[in-house]
Length: 187
Image (tube, rainbow, N blue to C red; front, side):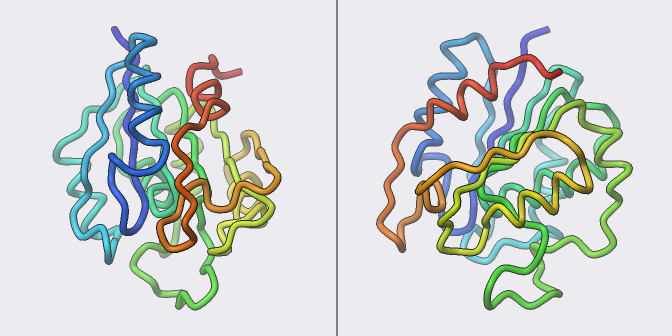
């Protein structure tokens, strides 16, 4: 069975933005099957729309890894509460589980009553990658909040912003460290 990567973009972007095309190519060159969909309503994401949309289209197995950037991270956590199988790895880049500045606590991308135990059961290994200067508030505190609930590894990089942002003019075309994390066997 070939390893499979499911790659989810963030708000207002898509699978052809920032490092995503580079990562797709890098993973495919390493023999992985990659699915990187253009999620619906990308300018106004909502877990109640994104989660069932992905569940209807994706297939999950024990060789699956999921990678999510920004709003793609809470999507992964939402999926982990619904899938019927334990996946290999989840890598959340500049993700969030708590409201970021100007985000109400009932925002449609924030999980209400998350089942942390089910998420832990459905994923062998978690990695949270954050920057010390994320302009959106998807910072190390967000990563630590997820690590506290789920275990795994928190990586805090220096001066990497949001790892890609059109508003902050951060193109971020390649992400070698993320490729290496994705290809690493879980511990």
